[in-house]
Length: 130
Length: 388
Ligand SMILES: [Zn+2]
Image 1 (cartoon, rainbow over the protein chains, first blue to last red):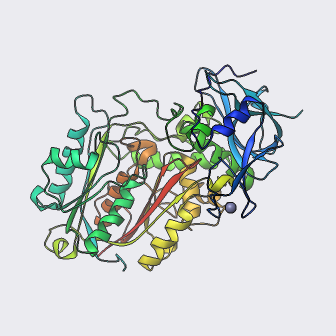
Image 2: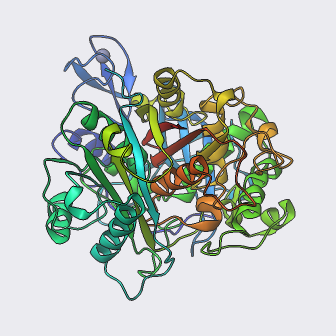
Image 3: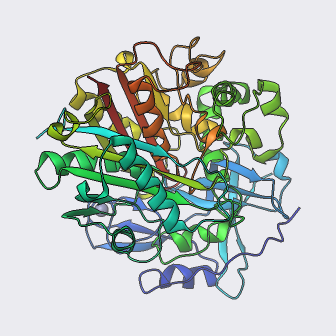
């Protein structure tokens, strides 16, 4: 059931430190642009749409829908990689966890869960809402 | 300025090895270069430009140029993954048209098989790339990234595993005639579906081979091509386009071919229906299907129907593709299939493909590649060539 795959620790940099600090307190932070109003992912200092530097952190609701996924079979511990489209409209790469991997489907509603990485901040994953 | 008719592919060479325990990487580049130079009927001292991507070690264009003893006035190490070498032909034509060089060499080589690389299933290690910290923790490999494209395509358009399997079946029909191909056995749709799942929904036989080897291409100015004793293959159109995650507006149903294809067709002044033979990048079966749609050979979402029932098999189908067996059966040197795509298209245009797969009156061919990953960021490159 639950993945025991070792999660490589993400390496925060000055641009992304706030995101991983948020992760440590259970907050999934997105960047929203004060100039054009668009939310983007992964988070950048400069908006990839209008190139304004007025981007601000905002907490995501943590709810989303599976856009696509694949279960990697030919590895010691199979796992489901996915893109989840968040309620905020952007899609992020993640894993679908704490569920029967054979029952993962596109369109499934999922919610945020945090999983520990090896010596780094927790990383955002998702589990189906039953 | 257009490149149409301003440059010719005058030499090609596909290294015959598929497992090169006994050769170095640089040696494979040089042997490939030697083969293409001889194919053209030129000598090394004629080369004045060199194009290669990122697979050799060091400051690669400098190291390899020095290793081969090239005297150059133009170098280009653009790396867009496996599509690089298709893009390089376009860039070489641009440089020739601009008068920066007259005879350009392009090489590719790699030894992933000898090095025991599990290309498809090994998760990408973290790097300093800006996206890496938001992807590497989740285990993106090669197979599962393309698999997510296939999964979404199936969801949106009803594409089936059987339809994808037909792409492999067609490639295997061609590979049986290629004595250097890694997989020469003709397979059926059932064989593909019964092969183990690697990353849902892709089976082992949906994936390309892992091979050592390499190849080279010589692109030359028209006045050079006219002096050589080879059939003349003109570069008449080229397009390139990177595609990524678009700030989080991820759409896995199409590739950069939707931009590179129209650019190439417009420059060439031809339509998809005019193409007699197509080399279509085939890292996975889904790669082929999406690119066929995106290049305009059929409508978006109709790719499954288009590729089914042997429609890609030379001599019986609507669009003969990858008549060397492609990456799926023949060769995917260095995990990069772009260069061999150009080579087989040139063989077809010269009438030098295997007689069993040679397309009759093949005067117009396309080579298209995807480099990087369709599931994250990739470079698309389209090349259209014409036999004079
Ligand atoms: Zn903006």
